Length: 421
Picture (cartoon, rainbow, N blue to C red):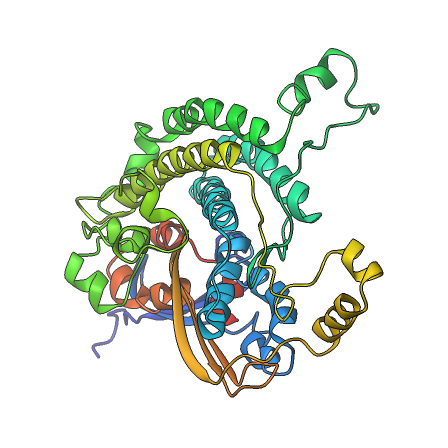
């Protein structure tokens, strides 16, 4: 090296875990040439809780609550994959009404997930207001979770053989408080006068106009387009090679959706479209997810219409899998024994293995379940879409600027509960 000439070297930088866009638990080690990324090395595992291992030491039903805590913004979808895997090995099928309720709640969950995503993704890129708009609708749907299960997030509502209980005939209402009273209280409760189905009718009629508001804030916003158009372009071939699913794959122009290709629950009876991108960049993936919210809204409307017209059981009458009612349990000795056995020992699942996948909001969420005939799983392995997506970050962000890493993390729609498991 000649005297006087400066030595130019790449430097390494930690992005996260304390960076607000790193979702609290992602550590990215970035090798940088000035402001340009040369290499990105994701370090995960900071939220590893051993879910798969814990499931091996508990009766089948006691792990349903753990599924909620994987991708903790799309709770019931995780439950659905696990419960379907158990039902497949048991050779049972949930009643038709329970299947429609599951389909409806899968779509409510998809909207919940995409609202969280659009709010946090926009916030990461500097658009503050969208977050507040999105959480306004999210709050309404959280009330549906709470109405059916008693919990706003970790519902444990799906059970092998159906769902925990039928939809409530009365939607919970806001009570008078120092913050809400008079005309304001009346406005808050106007959708809540009737049943949950009435509430969802009102919500789905109103929701498309709310999505229009998010689009007004972002779709033609020139700063938003500068941050997302042409950023993180993924070709259809690359997307398939990296095992991408969900909006990440559809944004690149591949019309792959398990709800259409391998229908489960009642998706075969539903009328909806699959939005597909063209350029495979962050902007296209944004458009795909926004359109998915509109399509989910359509599916919820169809489910509500069917559920109104067809009352019926929501749980199998098989006491080896589902508990008898409290009334039966207190009057009938046999029912009491079933109840006691079910909650202490659980049920034995025939030996075998299965893989059940569902179209979760982030992509294909699958549960590989092995049973050796005991009352707890021999092995549970969960296929999390975010894990496959995050593994592709290095080739995709190389050559981009530092600020584009934030856009890319946002477009992956990462939740580390399912990545680290």
